[in-house]
Amino acid sequence: MSDKPTAVRVYLARVRTALADLPASEIEEILEDVRPHLAELEAELGEGARVEALIERLGTPESYAAELRASGGYPPPAEGATQVLATTKNPSLAKPRIAFWGLVLCAVALALFAFAAAVSVEPTALLGAVLFLPVFLVSLFLLLRGGIEPVLALPEVVWLRETLAKGRRQEDSGKALSYLASLKPAWWILCAIVLVAFGLLLMLRSRSAVLLLPFLLVAGGAAVWAGPRLRGDRRLLWVAVPISAFVIGGILGGFGAAVDLISHRNSYSSSPSYYPSSSDRYGNDQLTYGSNEIENVYAFDADGKPLTEFYLYDEQGRPLTLTRYGCERSSGTKEKIGEDNRFPRPKIEQGVTDDQGNYNGYNGYRSSCREDAGVPFSAAIPKVTAPPTTPTSQSAPTSSSAPATPTPTK
Image 1 (cartoon, one colour):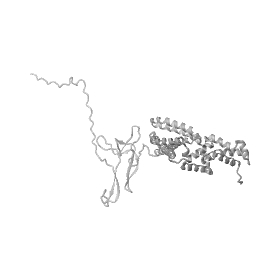
Image 2 (cartoon, rainbow, N blue to C red):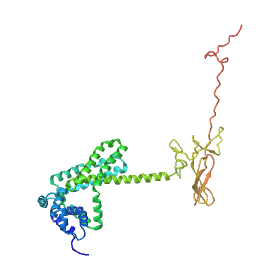
Image 3 (cartoon, rainbow, N blue to C red):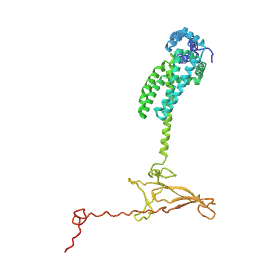
Image 4 (cartoon, rainbow, N blue to C red):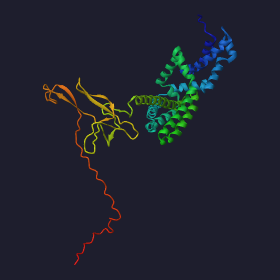
């Protein structure tokens, strides 16, 4: 394969030279954007195309670089060189560093609060973000007062931008970053949609979220406006980065809430229903008297005699089913043996048996279980007396006063 540089490589080299006053990462980003277009143009011109052919179609590399500066909002070469020199003469990095890390801190905080609000669907989870408002205002003030150039000249920012530029030059990561860069316009629209949807979702949960909706609408409009202008004015990062962080946190929180909801639905669908019982240990917890759960029911006839077998139903004919327990003879333990609505149940007693077979022996060593089918209490059924009959009109006294004493005859 020939090492002779192609027309595109020669042309881009001259474009790079014309943009040399810009930061290295900015130059790489610009060249990555125009390289595919130049490659297509070279393919149209055919193999062995010369630089002169590209110049005829696009103009000189220097004029093409000037057009790229104008379209991207970059300063002309002389002004850019002046700004770079001013940056290098800045003796203090404290203020730009506070501006940069204040932005990072606020972005992380917004992402976390948005995540919490999306998971809990509670607008109150966003109240903590107010604590970071002073930090953001200080960061924004230092940015507007000192400009973006000192921030871009910070060692950590330079390292970050050079790392991204190296990633673009690598084949695999470069394709991924180029693909993500191509999605930037759609991302800002997505941010606006997510912000509005987030506000409406919070309003469904709490009426107080209506106060938050105007801020989210403004943030959505700011994202659509500032996102496409980032290349020309990096100060807009103080708008785009917090909004993007908030949206990413909200999306991750919403995804987590959806997973949690699905898992809970699955657990509810797989758990025992109201009918029959819902607890292996205590039976159906819906059969209660007051606040106490009922494990057994006893019935007596009018003479106070206990009924040995009866079945319970509700007003719709549904059996009131409870878990039934019995003694497992081999292990001597209480075990679940089924579910039904037949009462009364035998009382299950567990203890130990000693060497002589005495139940609950103090020196016992073997678990024991027994069923007591007896009724543990007796019931005194109140006798219902017939209501008194109403006397007829012939026999009824005419007055409520006592009858007169007869007068003896003479």
